[in-house]
Length: 165
Image (tube, rainbow, N blue to C red; front, side, top):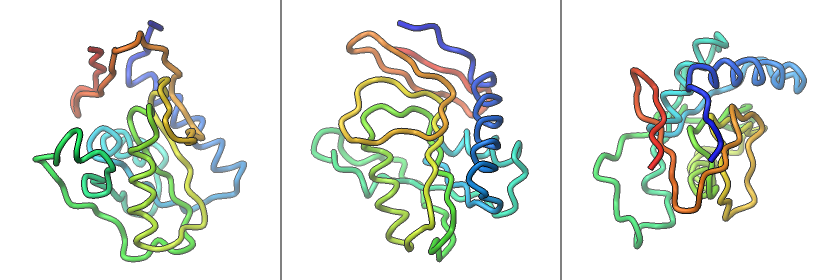
């Protein structure tokens, strides 16, 4: 297993790299969307660090998941908070850990139910192996190789800490 940096260190990397990417792509007024729960915590911090104008949006993708038969329904479903229109907006989609890609697929499905965005930039605190779908993040805090059967979860929101099981 690789050594993992502290979430606060990774957040600094994310903020700097995201700022550069937005400048390169000439995106000046993006809508930041955090995926509940860990992605929403990360998005809140990044939103503040970048001083974004549009209000922070959040998604709870529980109803969009494709694995109900395996994991069951999440008992703590939270409402999604997106503007009524995302048509032609540049979206920054934020999650804590990217592994299989299924959470991101579900989040994009929900976003597209609100309209067709101009672009989606994916930002993840940790990218670990195990992809099942062809999805990759544009901005990553750290690539992480875990042992087979190991999992990583972000706990928080205060303090933000990684739990590896």
